Picture 1 (cartoon, rainbow, N blue to C red):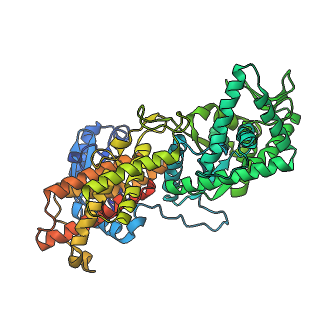
Picture 2 (picture 1 turned 180 degrees about the horizontal axis):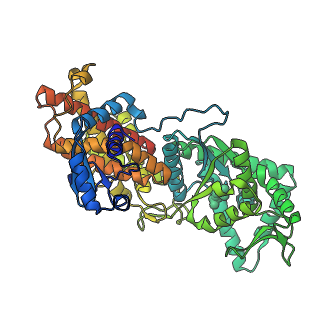
Picture 3 (picture 1 turned 180 degrees about the vertical axis):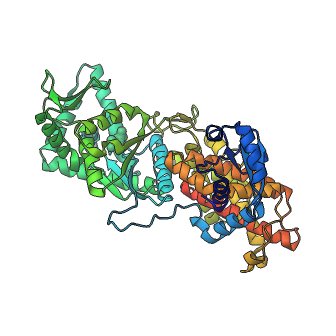
Length: 579
Ligand code: ARG
């Protein structure tokens, strides 16, 4: 609650109103805060309109509250804008990139840590091929959500589950063993491994046409050998996985994705099986007619789920059961978030239900953050397989587009600077586009549209930031240290006051984005703030303003720039000084 809200509550209290919830009117014509009188009609046995009217006559304006006005059953309060502007701008100015951050709750005397701990698992690739288009959306969401949570003073642990074993991995291994001639990677190493996966699929397909399935059987055999710890197989596996990791790391770096903890399926799948065997003993699970261990979730309309096959081998969900537990135990989590595509919605419904059945209290604190597919315009880009788009290629493409834009604008900018800006702008275009769309929706991503400096794009927000930066650079000499002390806050016009109101709302916006896990709340806010700022910038000649006004406007520009920069950073986007 800010001091204006506190004052209003105090005034209402003084006039006999004990419980008061304030609303924010839709239009500023109805003041800054509104108090609805409906609920009072019972107590006072009067029409709410009459109550509002009487109160408006009784409550006198104060230094903070300039005007009190009744409209129908509402009592509207108009706050002192000069005082408000001063408060908001002073706070932004003082707190800088920390403006809007939730302040830490003071730990109480009991030893319990007050800080919430949340794990965000994202990316989580399989090690048989390079990262693709879907991983890009995944990583961008994972990073942004983590930043947004951290901004609320939450301890965030970013994790990545690497599915590094299983039949799909054996397929690329087998192809390499047969046709790789022990060759070392001559292209990006994860792409190199990926070619053998493709090769396997092609050869297995050809075989099938002639009615054989030797390759599939050989891959199964290899998996069994892997599970038995066959030295030769394990060493091949290690070798090829190390190539994949080398490639992945490069892609993570280019996307700006970082992790605090990697989990590996190969190290945890056995423990999952143990939990399931125990569950069988305790009748949480049962065996079906084939001998497989299943969870019967028919009552929950989730069907029967196989957990361990009849031959004793484990499946995808086996490892997840242990992993969920490991996460909570290792990190004492309050919440565990999984950023995984919507094709696994059912998987996570089943997983969380099973965890609940196993009696884990924390099961209710698991959450699947699901997102839709990403499509590119037809014929836009083709990967080597002709189907899936690789993450690296997409990143390259957006940077290429940005590079072209920059070269158009600045004919003689040096190469180093061109590259720096191209990367920042290209990634901004991609990330902003992916984040502004509702997670549940599929995305038809158009790189060209996303790179535009106008419209609802990342580069548009970056451009606004760069422009404000350039104004400040020009004014550098005039910015003295005592700027603030000398500034008058009563000189702002309506447009400027509107920007200040928006700046004042930023902490709430950041809070909402975190509570709802929706970076799109921030993208929307930034677009609106930039639009208002640009209108102001066009209408008001900043440099030509007389001293008093100039001072006030410098502060406004400074603070708007600060909040736009903070907002971009929360989305994992770099704010650059020049474009
Ligand atoms: N590796 C899996 C895939 O590519 C995603 C893993 C998601 N995380 C999990 N805990 N199941 O489909």
